[in-house]
Length: 79
Image (cartoon, rainbow, N blue to C red):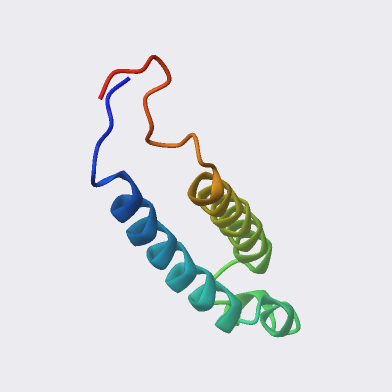
């Protein structure tokens, strides 16, 4: 496996994008939308909650990769 110098940069970019999406998902307040009549929903609150859970999982995975000293480093001694 070869080392790519942009791997950490890519992870940081992905993390920033996921954090931005998560902020948008949190600001949608699905718990308030569910109180409205269905005809007034701009989105399905259940979908919004699922999206938020998925984004949190993705953010956790990105953070785990960033903290993994093995990520982006060759395991067979090649540079």
